[in-house]
Length: 299
Length: 243
Image 1 (cartoon, rainbow over the protein chains, first blue to last red):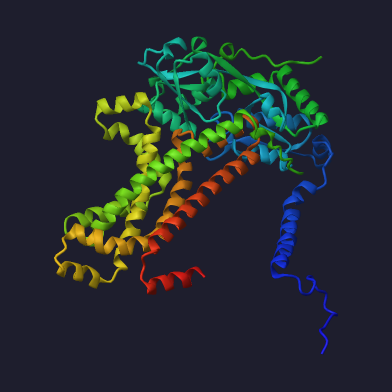
Image 2 (image 1 turned 90 degrees about the horizontal axis):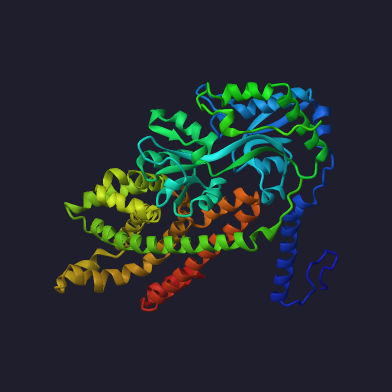
């Protein structure tokens, strides 16, 4: 009786079992590779975010929920802060409704790249190494990097930190700059701001080194804020401008965001927001003199 | 929207940082494994003997260590050192930095409890006639353990202890919370400067994967080594299981 040949056969008859196995493995892995490559084959979307915002009438923006008074969850459970108000002002100037979501430092970049939002406000400082991945707007804020110490510590400036221990959060800009400014200090890093502040309270570190805005927020959250001193200009060793994040290669959208930022600086809205969240009469008690920030305005 | 992988971030400075992290992870995992196995064997044997005074203490320790998350334990031991240690010792350790020591301590406490339970289960699996026969031959406790019980228990113990070692190697990543510069720490550090988190995560996953596979291979080697002298019945059983 002849063998049935009408059935499609993957393997030539008499093929050694081992070779058959490799063949099957090759087919299977080829399939797996195709699945893995799928996202890369997705059609590139050349449409500017500005067009999307105009068409839908909605600005999808994501703001950090990790930085007190910039983007954080207040006692009532609301997501508020300087940056929340800032993106609301930008939405107003684009005649769009604001659709705001929350991000953390771990989720912000994928959220923007995958097109789930068109704008990120997350106290991001622009480095060249970061600019390869996303684009940044012009600066909308500048925070000096300084030190938070205990009131009785006897530390008044960066030189006093020789031989002492400073704490910071992994990846804060100060990790690089403080080491350069005071090579004789030991820098220890923590995963979150909360842990680093606990370490300062317990004396595990003598000072915290990061943005003045963050340090002021930590001090404001302490049980007794007067136990801690934020060093002013003498404790400053660097600083970081903040820029809004937009997707790479969308200059039309970046222009629109930049112009909205400049408009709200010129008409005094920026000052209003500063006085509401950051200024001398807020919990942060920071002054414009300490920050020394002026937004660039194109005429 | 597509994601464009750019592996060039791993060349040069950042790739070296990741390798620095690997060295710290190896040190952390190696030391913790050493201590956890030593303490785990002692505690497990004590629990197995059912000593009236020591058994409840060991039992309480195991329940405490097993039923709290390892991250909480790491933070707890690091931030409570100031209350536990004498002042001179705390200020000395503070000055030299003890985040690595705290991580080794916390992970040892956590994993020794699991090792102890495996050891107890392994000893329980030896028929009680073995211990009784050894005792009737006049062997004391140490001799019974060394010549009769452990040689039979250890081959049984190798697979679950290999499991424990793999889980320990992965849990070292929690030490980044208190600033131990191991692989997971370096991953986050590189991500914040380059925003190339996906690439770095893939690379660090590969490192952890290789580390864990290496531990499994070593465990298999030890298992074979100890199984050489097994009697034909257990050799047959082992062969059947591995088929």
